[in-house]
Image (cartoon, one colour):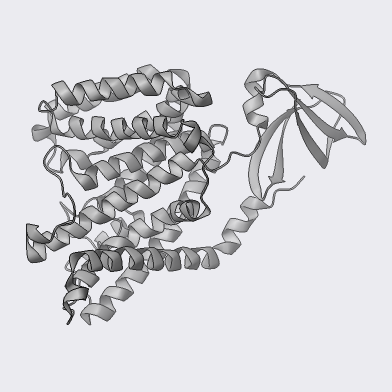
Length: 408
């Protein structure tokens, strides 16, 4: 018979599918895993059945179910923080250009084809698809949705209230012209996404939050397609994107980059990359990088949004290749891991922080300097994001702990 055993391993939850002899009823006492070879070709499960130890040989397909808890990948954490910095810098430059003109822009803002913020978002979406595919292969659809709900909405609500409070302190009052019934879009996390068309109670999260919630809702279906037919799934998403792009002016009024179909290509690529780039594969990363480079050299002017998609994919593949180098393959940084963990909370609050700091008329030229202002925005976003993250951990601790306490 088949059973599911919940184990508390390094304070994390894993669902282990076990095969028990027909005549025995497993007793929840102990579980040990032995690795037979470095390549994980075989693996043995030893579990106590009615006070007797039985050794069960697992097939290669089942090994991934029993694999050791995955470590945080330095490359993914680095790209998550890197993309976050790109987004923060882009929004800072937008505020500075609006208030002072292009002369007070830091580094590079972007153009129609290479927009710093949009490429940062694209990289962030690829990472999301990659990370979800890596961490939830054997999680049921029901458990996936529960974890995503607990991951997104408590943090969003806390950050929303905190930013609302900051804006009230800074402006002295807050007013919305949206009808009361439209607050449902804020509850759903879609106020920023629909703000281009409807009057909403938007404060934080921007269009990206609604887009990523939509992709998470579709992920169990995307995951299934990726593992069955990765290349076909990616090709199909690209075909749908090109068809959608051809008819875009007829079908939509929202910016094409913000469209779910455009984001889905990046999200699906992230999942496919997890399948194709497994086990330190360098060949596929190199091939995709070359194909992207060729497209950017030859077809850059054909489709603006596709150019941004290809650019984000190219950057992702190049960075993944870099982190395959021996000098980087064993890198670890607790600070980087922490920033990656806080990235969602920082993303939610950074735009409000930038708006407030760039609105202040400082007395000294030093504080008015664009580099000083950016440093203040960056540090304040990290600090305030961390505060919101800690509040989320404290207020919702009683809901998150049971997920970690399924012990044999």
